[in-house]
Length: 225
Ligand code: ADP
Ligand code: ADP
Image 1 (tube, rainbow, N blue to C red):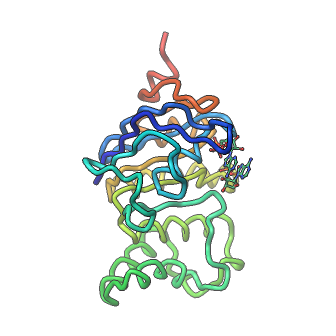
Image 2: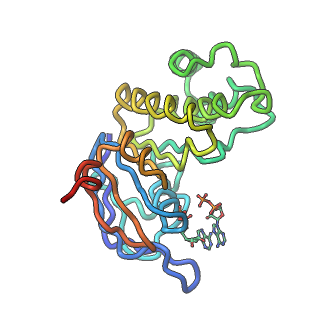
């Protein structure tokens, strides 16, 4: 479990500053939502936590450690992308275990973690299928399973439900919260959907044009007098 802290973090692409002097502490074990309209800098912020983007200035800490120069593979984070980013030529089971094999984890431990994830996400009967032979909801569960088995300190999700139809999205939100209650990692979740933010989040960080506007509980963000 880890606390994530941004201190005066800015990010520019060329001359355009897309994240502006971000100061934010994401508490150990909480579910923090990054909410705001398309293009406001949410994904960039998430990718900086993952180490997929460098910061232009400022510092990011995980607990006491400054991680600006820690490569992505060493940050112990698990990320779920909007398009799921599954390996198309690998069966479900191989998509899920691949990262663990790369880390040279023991076969016993891989089996233990994978069986638990397949069970939890109801994927057992699909484990030998290729991603192209799955529905959107099933692919999304494979992407979640692949992140869950990593058991990283931080669970980072970028619009993970946006490709699902409305009904599936509602059940998937509940599933996500349940997964989090099992593992209790620090969870950072990017969405532009208010309802999603309110049902999934312990706290909501509202962004607009690269700037953090407020951070508070869903009740306080939406019902403040
Ligand atoms: P959001 O996730 O809120 O939709 P992003 O973080 O993806 O926003 O993008 C913030 C801004 O940065 C947008 O204007 C986007 O076009 C721009 N941007 C994102 N990635 C790049 C990049 N690799 N190069 C240049 N501009 C980028
Ligand atoms: P999202 O749905 O998260 O906003 P996008 O479709 O905007 O994602 O971006 C997909 C990829 O393209 C990301 O890796 C992002 O960094 C990059 N990107 C986004 N905007 C730009 C841009 N204006 N110029 C270059 N790359 C960009």
